[in-house]
Length: 208
Ligand SMILES: Nc1ncnc2c1ncn2[C@@H]1O[C@H](COP(=O)(O)OP(=O)(O)OP(=O)(O)O)[C@@H](O)[C@H]1O
Ligand SMILES: Nc1ccn([C@@H]2O[C@H](COP(=O)(O)O)[C@@H](O)[C@H]2O)c(=O)n1
Ligand SMILES: [Mg+2]
Image (cartoon, rainbow, N blue to C red; front, side):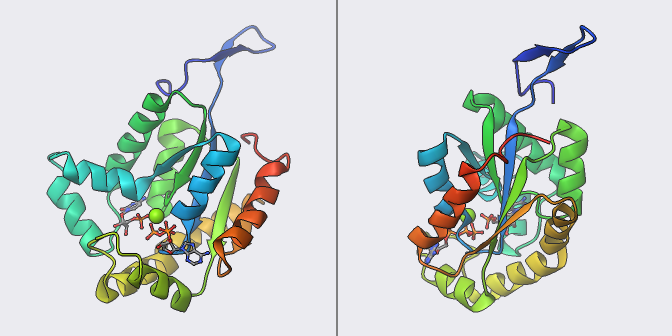
C-alpha cells in the first residue's frame, strides 16, 4: 500500500524500500470487549485504534452511495465486501499520521484477510484474540445501550454464527503461523487489560 507510509529505508542492495506500518489485528466475538480494550491500549501504547465496524457506521452516516448496502449488511450481521472496508481502513491509516495500528474487527473472513494482504502487503505483527463464551457476550451486547441497530437478540445470534463460520477460521489461520495471542475475556475489564498489557510489553510488536 504505497500511499499509507511515507518513510523509506535504504536496503542492503541500495534499493529504497518502504517502511511498513505495524498492524495488530484485534479479533473476538461480538461483545468480547475489543473496543473497550483497544481504548486502553491506545492510552498506554501509542497505537491508533481503527474499528472496521465504526468506520462502516461512519460511512453510512456520511451519506455515501454505499450507505444503504452497508446498513442492510450490518442489520443482518453480514460481512461487507472487502473492497469497501479496506478502502476505509486505508484512508483512516493515511489520515492518522501514525505508523502503529490496532485494526479491530478485521479481517472478519477469508476474503477480508486475503484482500488486505494482497492490497497492502502488510502482515500483522500479531493477532490479539479475545475469547469469550456466547452467554457472556450476549449479556454484554444486550446491556450495551449504544443504540446499535445490530444489538438485538435476532441479529446477535446471526453475528455469533458468522463469527463461528467465517471469523474463527481466520483466527485459526494465524494461529497456525504462531501469531495469535489469546486472552480469556470473560473477566473484569481491568483483569483483561493486565493480560493485554503483558502482551504489548513483550517484544513481539514488530511486523513480520
Ligand atoms: N471485561 C468486561 N466485563 C464486562 N463488561 C465488559 C467487558 N468488556 C467490555 N464490556 C462491556 O461489554 C460491551 C461490549 O464491549 P465492546 O463494545 O468493547 O465489545 P466489542 O468486542 O467491541 O463488540 P462489537 O464486536 O459488537 O463491536 C460494552 O458495553 C462494554 O462496556
Ligand atoms: N470487517 C468487518 C467488520 C464489520 N463489519 C460489519 O459491521 C458489523 C459490526 O461490526 P463490529 O465489529 O462493530 O461489531 C458486523 O456485524 C458486520 O456487519 C463488516 O462487514 N466487516
Ligand atoms: Mg466494537
